[in-house]
Image (cartoon, rainbow, N blue to C red; front, side, top):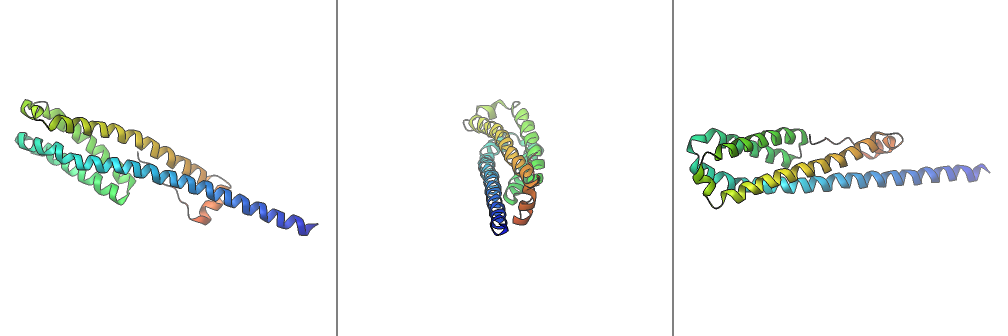
Length: 172
């Protein structure tokens, strides 16, 4: 009788491990997909920043400090995204949002700049991408939370450790 029970228990444990592993892999894939989506938006905004900053640089000669803050914050956000350093990206993203807001507030004092053909579409697109980054950030954080909770809860934790799963960082 034990010769039937022991293999049945091992078979159930193996099946459970396979199911848990599959679930964890799906969650990790969801995190990677949401990161790829977020990263694509960050790259698009980085590419768009030159179309926003070029006319500003031509017309806002006395605001070089504001332009430099935006350029440095954009470069920091781009570098952090390329390294997939989520905590550094969160800090750089916050600095970039603040510097863009300051720049756009200063740009209102330059009617010639606002009348330039490429400035307003670039401004609107940067603002739209900023809103989309917020939405994708929430999706990314949701996927990370699911993975982290699942991989840290018993009995999934034992299998997650064995398979090399670790907690992912939130994009705060």
